[in-house]
Image (cartoon, rainbow, N blue to C red; front, side, top):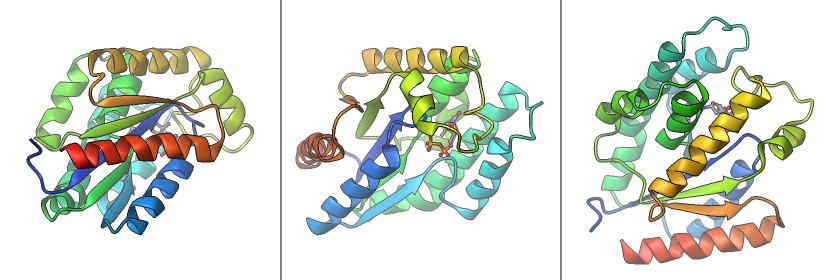
Length: 209
Ligand code: TYD
């Protein structure tokens, strides 16, 4: 039984998997069905979290310690949960968030090698605001970085191929450990096809919880 009136859906996936397009389409479709939809993103979504985002993604911050990085993502998240996500879920909205704690577990836990510390650091800020459903857009990391191409890469995107392979492996393990919540969608296919698969799963969850 869901503790909130609303529904919390997150999107995850490596860089270049097409999350923002799919989030926009899902937002439109749910709005058309009459739901109040709040779409937000991480790191960001509030003024304070957007300020933290700038520090996190600034390519000049080459000497950022992995623990500092983890705590800044967690801090941006805590603010987003208390200012946007929790109030929206309490009043019955559907919240769609571009990335959430699974990203920290994959990027900082696996990519940076900080392991279980990442979940512990995040637990206080998240509380009981865990997603009802997480859509994981799966894409081979090599294809992802090709899709990003030559556009200017942020500090995390600039990491080497090995880092992105560890991140991908991190996501794979999370899917394995929580298959009931995380729904894997192959990110290779037509935009409409992928959108239809996502909508079908989301409606199933909305009707069920
Ligand atoms: P963003 O521009 O939002 O990337 P994308 O469009 O791929 O979502 O930048 C977010 C970057 O931060 C992205 O490379 C993944 C990384 N990240 C983490 O390392 N840990 C986290 O907890 C989150 C939320 C994102």
